[in-house]
Image (cartoon, rainbow, N blue to C red; front, side, top):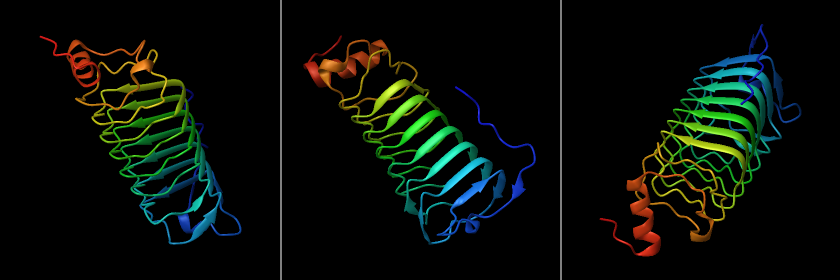
Length: 208
């Protein structure tokens, strides 16, 4: 994946610098901040670093971030449907119950993130990596992928209906149950133990 291109000299800023008339920030450092309760159309941030920041009161549409690093940020239960992310790293962030329906993500890494019950229906993933994330009960049905990985993730109960499973490697992940389309499983990579879970659920087989 392509790494974020952060500016060398980041200027301190706050999320309150986004306004209804000018919701754009570039080349900033935001640290230990809280999103105010204000509705924003197309809030955009570029070439920036955002640390220990609470977005849970965020209200708006078409959030966009490019060339950014978000570290220890909280997006739990936020509506980020139709968000667009380009060359972004989310490090140890919280997306529990977050709505990412129809998100567009290109060159994105989610690292050590808490993402249980995340809702990413019909999202588009172009070079997106999930590393050591907890995604139990998440929903990725009808999402489109070009390059997509789950590595050392907890994915029990994740919904992958209508998802192209060819070459998807789940062998390093933890799960006992997934929502899959039987006819789309060709090319899915799993361990022997994982294969027995899938065979029991979808084929009624008891592997001994």
